[in-house]
Image (cartoon, rainbow, N blue to C red; front, side):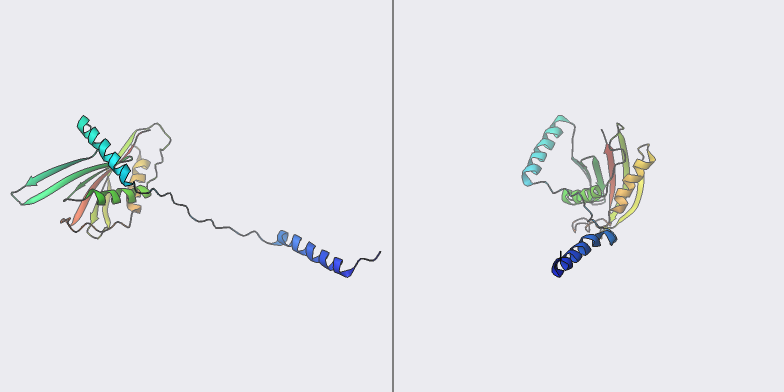
Length: 188
């Protein structure tokens, strides 16, 4: 029984290519980083949210409030703004700032926020103080009010420190820096 040479030739290459992957080193596959991104709310959602905010304010709870203090002696007008969003409460001082800019600040910090107590039954609240300079740099980050859990406080501070690319302060904001008191609150 004579086997044709072409069959032996094909059989040899078939075996060679089928066994070749066994001798190769496994490649390290690099997977791309995946970031969780939340999109800006649609206009309809913003309107519905504003309606619910107005209803809450009428009840006296006040979800978002603005307090204006006018002092004509020094011809200085200051405005303190409180803004709440998904476990964050932001209080700004130093001049008139649009809520649009404050929302940008909150969203940038929220991108860097990790709660180590996310699946616990603890109520935690920490306040972090920092300044935003005219060019958008964050300075003087410190824990203003502790939650009682040192690691929670440090994660709050870390979220602010990791936030690097804030837009410059709006042109209509006259002060040299925007002072922020950011409250991180976790309620299970």
